[in-house]
Image 1: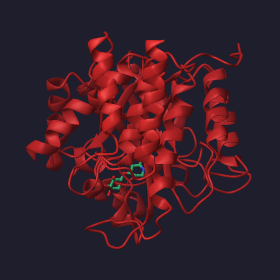
Image 2: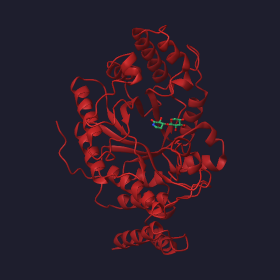
Image 3: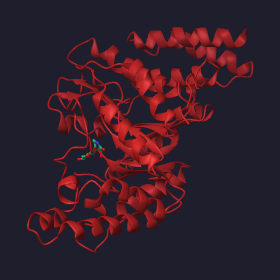
Image 4: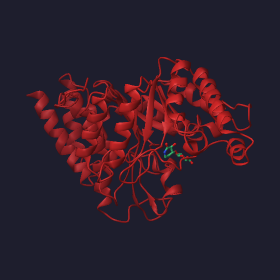
Length: 395
Ligand code: XIL
């Protein structure tokens, strides 16, 4: 009985917050939690995302950049709310090898130290991607001084050097990032820089080399539009088919990262996301939501007030639905947001006129989306029927 009343109060309180409620309106929720605490339950309204998620075998993470954790108030949230860290840029090839043969690990090391100090795991991101490559590499390929065979060997060296340096410290590596087209049917993008210049073997090779350098790291393929964003599900199908093939060939790919960059102006199917996660899990893969954010149109990039009042409801709703899809499948092991405050989000700089994509506002205050995630995790931790397998894994 006690548990049921806590859950009922939780749902009502969350509804008040989702309906634009203030903290005053949420007061009954806090009181009920205090009563529950005196009766032996933790007061979940003051529990961190990481603590709630820990009870149900999920890690909650954020992308971080070194500059942001130099602000103490920001670092306090980053250290207390999350149990896994993704370096947002610090481990990309452009940053770690700015001149050929000359390495700069300072930013990556700073984030690794931060994670260790806060008992956090690390998602390494990302070894092979067509963006944020060093200028010496792209220029050398463009002017023919780096041949296709040499490029493959440089990729081998890059992966071996970086993965070996952090061996034993990385939980999940995003080995290959964003290789598929958004077309229907989708497939490996034949115009992708790596495919053009090194050939399609770069993908299985990258996984093999990463596995040799750190046999205990979970190796992920990471992409966007593969979790219910695409009405046809064409990109999901192409990635699924490809990963099934890689696994049947014995390539060491252990997981798929669903980036989860949503935008309230587009359609999106949470039911499809859940099915997609289940299907990947059915291949024997782990799944991670790796870069969750939900953007919408805003007044300006500084204040980031949504221009459509409906967005204030759609934004936390989509976060909540993403998390619930993740919670529904036990093989989904982490849920990471791509920066947690609107002020450190990549969105305003990349998507003209958009913002409000995070779970904290521009003043580092939690938004409705934060409370939605918190109550979803609390419900799951208190025994709601989630994280129970509802499908038959394929052999
Ligand atoms: C973004 C970073 O957040 C930006 O700071 C950078 O300028 C560009 O890259 N998909 C990915 C991430 O896999 O690496 C990207 O990160 C966002 C899209």
